[in-house]
Length: 130
Length: 130
DNA sequence: CGCATATATGCAAGTTTATGCATATATTTG
DNA sequence: CAAATATATGCATAAACTTGCATATATGCG
Image (cartoon, rainbow over all chains, first blue to last red; front, side, top):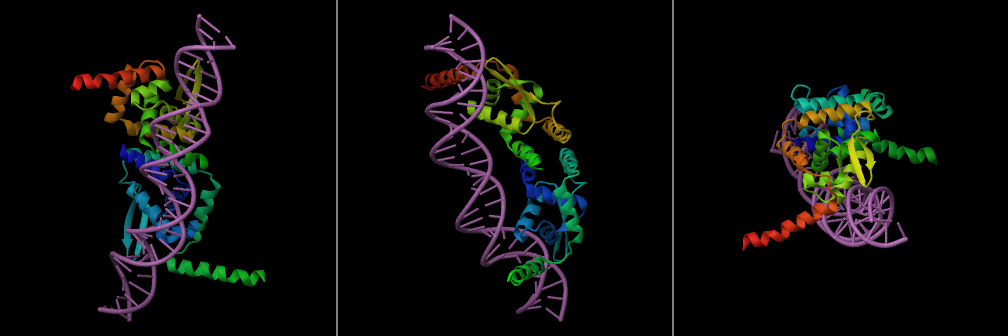
């Protein structure tokens, strides 16, 4: 019961649903999620942890990388049902499709690299304007 | 998408799940829900409204009574899937079973009557104690 | 060991949510 | 129409949640 509430709580947020959608595509590390959804590193990390705590994801470590994926085997039956229903609800959604496309283009580079790229963008803008 | 978030938000609360469980048994009015779960009138009313707004319930009026029930026909397909998965998750849960039993004993009397009964209980207690 | 790097987390500020109380609304009945 | 009654809701307050920033933790490498 408390578990079920926790599951619904974690699913009741747009960003977290978008992360779940990415993981339906494939296993992801934190830095890929932050790239694909253009969110901060801490936010990406927290969302993945929350989905993990709810029993939806598994975690595999590969060196410095934390690789999260949907725990298709380990999930309780009812949880599997809920995730499947959610998957069907995503079907055809524009945002979800675009997110997955951005994920395909994402590279497994760390968050510090992403941060540098963002800064470069920010610095370049004034030049374009003036 | 916004709809899906709303659905999960409404399901991410123990009281609201317990109300949904009651409605799986049968159509209920506000006063029956407040009796079965021993919650305030405003809380019962708000929970039913929230489930209604999320598209899970329908409302039928009979005189002063507002009769809510699960909108099995009107629900979107994905919503039906989610509600069914939720139903399966309830299976065997002690709290849910007890709630349903209390619902069977509940009478369709209004909230003011329930309030009087509660007060009577409160007044009687000191006599038993001293 | 010390540096680089990917991820996790403590804290604070802002926002949202839950709920009791009082009251409004709406319907029935006499 | 007025009284009774079932439900809905405005408001205030407390609790919970979200998120950015800074920093801690953990791993790999030279």
